[in-house]
Amino acid sequence: MLSTAILAITIVVLILTYLRGKYNEYYWKKRGTAFYKRNKTFGPLWEYMIGERPLFQVFNELYWRYEKEPAVGLGSFDSHGLYVKDPTNIQFIAQTDFQNFNHRGVTVLEEDYLANNVLFLHGQKWKLIRQKLTPIFTTAKLKNMFYIIDKSAQDLIEHLKQHPEKLSGNTYENLSHFSTAALAAAVFGITTKSTFDSPFRVMAKQALTPTLYSNIRFAINSVSDKVSQALRLKFFKDQESFFIPAIKKVIKQRKLDNTKRHDFIDLCVELQNNGPMIDQETGYSMEPTDELMAAQAFFFFLAGVDPTTAGTFGALFELGRHPEIQKRVQDEIDAIFKKYEGKLTYDAIMEMKFTDCVLNEGLRLHPPIGNYTLVTHIQKGGAQFKKEQFQVRLKNCDIELIPRQH
Image (cartoon, rainbow, N blue to C red; front, side):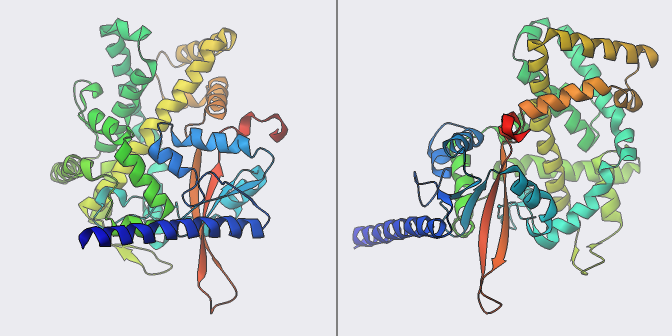
């Protein structure tokens, strides 16, 4: 009896999957849009889920396969997937019409505490938390936190002096150590003999290293948020037991000490002391609990580690290929260090114009983020009809490398 029920369910699922794939193909054909036919129901995310390639490589292949198309329809189970490639359309979606695209295509559970951060949330929650986090990114706040970055840089120099073999070792890993140390110190105000003693390095590596399970979890959430919620899939379950207690401990200690270190924890303490967070326009409110603050700190931490490492590595890679540019960068840095008597300050960094250009070029050639997802709902046929959900993927990687786009 049980085997019969399982067989029946399997057949129904396969039929629904097939029908959804045919519907996706018909939907985009009717609108004159190219359609990715390799997997009509799950799109390129199926290749990502079962393969070993990172997501940006999967989409890079798709980009060149449909080189002349401005957009490509993608398979998706309960929404309409669209891969946007044309730079003009990308700019319109990401900038001009951004108020309709603040959903990042990720749906999280309330009990997935660390996933309830400003990157994954949308709607009123996203707006309110974003408003409250904005002050930490002002010039004044960054200046106040610069001593933390400077200490991490000094620690990196000392670390490499003590381990000279690492100068010819894994450069990306060394940069990742620095990024983790600097971000951990900026978030938590950790004061150890060396920021490389931070226990957050292992956690960051664990959270950022893809596994088969994490790939499947992400793909399911992207293809169907309803299925993801039904399966109760959590993004950062393994990190909760370490990260949330750590944040609670630091916040509690900061309140007891009543000190200011100009870091992220200062902002958390300030928000909690002010009581409920309220959106003045809508009246929507949220309680700044330790768990909610931990989620924002987790985002601030992880979102900084990999992009910072990848961006720096890309610039160093290109400097290694162009020694004449490397010399100009070194000469500029030496001159400004001499002007500021060997001290690395915020103002000194701001004067390194050519170095800034080199970093920007490194980001252009090797962008840390290959593509990203935005979701919107479009009204169809008037108020009496339900809204259709569109999941839009925007292309970032390779666009800057195409001559016709310049």
